[in-house]
Image (cartoon, rainbow, N blue to C red; front, side):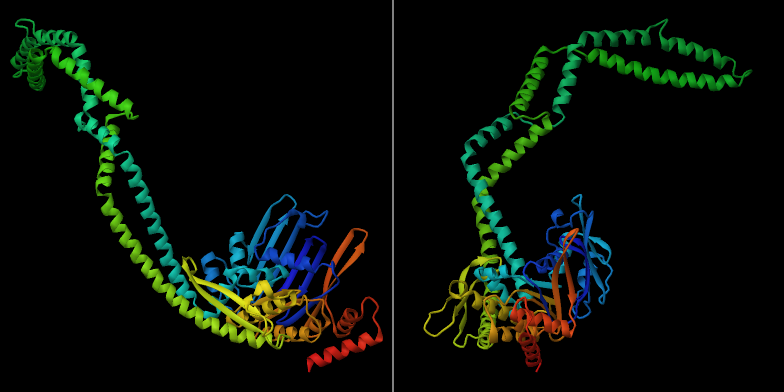
Length: 556
């Protein structure tokens, strides 16, 4: 629950430090005094969007900070996932907004993503404002209420996982059908392309480079032959050839080996070089004899290069390897076309199997929801009758629908305030006061099923008064038991008198402008506040006596 709230430079608030307590608390104050400002500040801690206009005029930064006691609510897993220090007795949430448009969020003084703060906030505070009554028009809200009472979170998670897999398989199937349909339209053209590339016999990705190198050689065949024969004549000349000269040099050195030992190593090195040169000379002689220009081969290679270049240009690729890959891709497309029906049939079986699995899980959810629906009907009857609707009928209508992410059930809350009016969707037939009582009853029922530390009601009492208001206050008081914290912003003295703790929001006109304040009232101040709510701006002795009596009666 929220223990302390600190607000600084937020709209009309200079600085506010207020302590909160467990149980049922009330907040009162004149219209426009700033109660909505308090809710707006709390909304920032729940991850709501920040606005620079929320910064008090003349200030550079506004800060909203709250301390929470989470010791009863087992939220360790969230802090482990976010890698944030966990202090169950003093968890701190803080938002800062600067005049330069920057917004920062902190959890236990650790910078946090706004999405993380929002996720944690959903476990800490539920703010029920008047616009939330519109939720009764939304089917997903009604379904969510039934699911909460059904305690089917694990089964729902299992179903969602299987349904998402079903969606993925269905998407794959449709994509395959579309691809095959498109491919069949192009089958004739693809066949032509494949035959054209197949005819070109594109097998060796290095062929183009090899051909270009060979053509380069043949284009300079005369220069190559001349160079080879020139080298051969130098190496193999009879008298002045290198081989003959090296042999003479070696003999000279061998002749002096007996008197000059170093000559032996030098002679051996010359002999080794001479053997290598003889081998080179032989290779040059062979190549010189083999080098020849074949005009037909030269033309064939040029034609081959022209074919490859033409195909590369036609298929918009830069090399032969890419052209071969293009041919393989076309072949794969043609294979898919020829075997496409088999693939579709196989995938259809998988989709159907996954659909059947989802249907089975959805049926289990339906069973749980119908049981929970009966519980909702019974509890709503018990809650609404004391709230001044003695002949109320409330039905949870569950109808089948196509599989969706939340199952195969369509849920609608049907309502009738008397025996003569047929059951209809609650948002269509309930008055404003009746809707307020329905929503309070739903919240009371949900609060017993879900451990939520703090619930704030913003004028849930709209459209009711007198004895009914007292009954609504009793429900909120009961919701505030067992360590839970319930806070009601109210204009009704009957509800204000029921609060264990009473806060008042007021505004003051100063030289710097309008300033809002909030403080906890003592017993005497509380009597005066309720008396003013009873009698108006002028507090009469009768109103004070009525206030005392109201508090005493409600405390009994």
